[in-house]
Length: 390
Ligand code: APR
Ligand code: PHB
Image 1 (cartoon, rainbow, N blue to C red):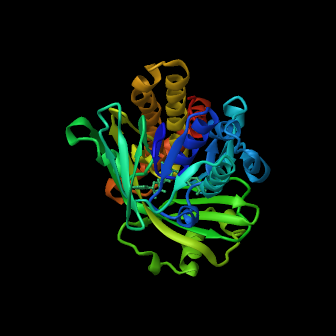
Image 2 (image 1 turned 90 degrees about the horizontal axis):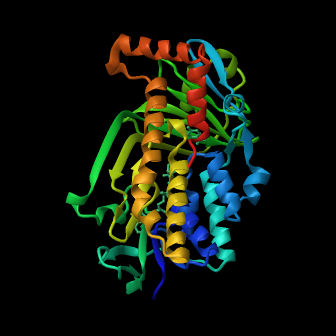
């Protein structure tokens, strides 16, 4: 088998890259370790920057998002008994975010790939990149006991944090920066009316909480939990009670509860690998970096990587221009580090850090009080939340 760009991973990064390249006449093969059903059963975040929404439209996959997604012009922060709204649109000259689940984005991308006859191979085991430092790289894998190989010009590793792509870069050619937080998020999806039509991020002495949503009848909530806790320890009743205690009383009073459709715990981590390329291998999305979910940047950063990488590959094939590929890592990393900073800042501002003592706690409150007293500070938060330019 031969293709131009072999893509490892059929998450949003890999599928979006393959969709954009295919529309530009560049053929790809996508190799995914899991089944399609498994990929589509993962519940992930759901806030799309305008840049990503525009990219999806330009790639021919924006129709259902525009019909079913919700445009949000603001987000809310609760702290110290206050509930404050950040007017995203007003502070950024009309920019907004689109609330639409990553699972839906992935499904729309799969359908678009089907419609164009895109090649996505599932249950590909032991995917292994070879000869990445030559101009004839190839991938091998197994499927149902048989061995396969695809020859290509380039390999795009869109295979997430635990993927094989980053691991195939020699240790002395890559630097990894990491920060692990001493807590996780327990998330619940429920078929209940969202407590608010906008998101509410809450700083509370019992720990952070977030009220989000997927539609008028589907809610997504999170509470900060210790790393040692197991999901089995959290009955639905315990979850609802804890969430209610962390929200302002007037919000808690209108919280509609019901059985959870999904419940899971995710640890929080900041991680960046540098550089994002090695020979003919390019890393995109979670394969190269992770952010804690507090700023809702994970999917959006994957999209900006795909933006830079797809443009660079198109310039290579259409114009013989190598500059984009040479500059990919540096260009993507400049934006990644700014999103890492913002995600760390929001995480630090809103979570409970008992180890930081009362001094740390008072600083958080001073910062929140300052934020909502200063148009400059609110503008800085809003422009990061809606997404920095590509
Ligand atoms: N071989 C083939 N496929 C692999 C391998 C491998 N060795 N390792 C991982 N994969 C697949 C995973 O099964 C997964 O489907 O790669 C895909 C990576 O998808 P994601 O983890 O969704 O990563 P990405 O596409 O970069 O999307 C980033 O996902 O985790 C969220 O917060 C993150 O929203 C962000 C988005
Ligand atoms: C979500 O809806 O799942 C969500 C929203 C905002 C975040 C993180 C997750 O910051």
